Length: 122
Length: 172
Image (tube, rainbow over all chains, first blue to last red; front, side):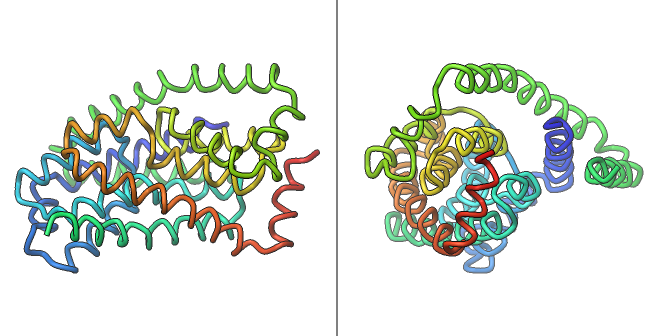
């Protein structure tokens, strides 16, 4: 019963990661990409679902190839806290209202994290 | 049938993508395969622990420790539980279900899910290693604030009625 949504998630992650390689990603969320880059990072982080042990080396790779620290921070934050693909699973336990509220708030919070990182690394 | 429509659509989508870029088949299957193995290896311990928790820990005990009226200690304990976990967020949901069935307070369950999503200690060490102490420290500090206000706001958003409906669903 739990395996069916899990397999769906795993396939979607693999699909997104192969369709969007890190080299393309780091160009899109470069240090000079500004708020557009932050926005893009937040959307990318929300719709993808990468386990932490793969996400941090990937974030490192992005930084090394020129991504901005705020963009990467927002990406990491949305990756961990916002899960569009897992929304159906979350809904089955908490209901639509709470599931959507939690994801929207976590999405908003990621921008606060980005702001804090911007202040810390200015 | 409805249960499998999601997975069927996903398989169709992947098949469609691979049909147009067959060169991506190898990276796709190796990524999907390794992720699948990781999740498979994590499932048994999670469900064994859940089963043991379900069988051994009496409901009154859970309610007393992390129930609706457990206050600050309950909140701290819920965060502690969430941050010592390992594994992706979607593994937290079946655990949250068991926690609710056992009488955990709703606010505490949201704290647990929040802590699981972004405060896991093993992940923090890994984050420091990869992104540096300053990056990890700023993000972690913000996460603590974040999971509290998000848990508070989600509960608020549900309202009294939504809250009791949700809790009642797990009380039978």
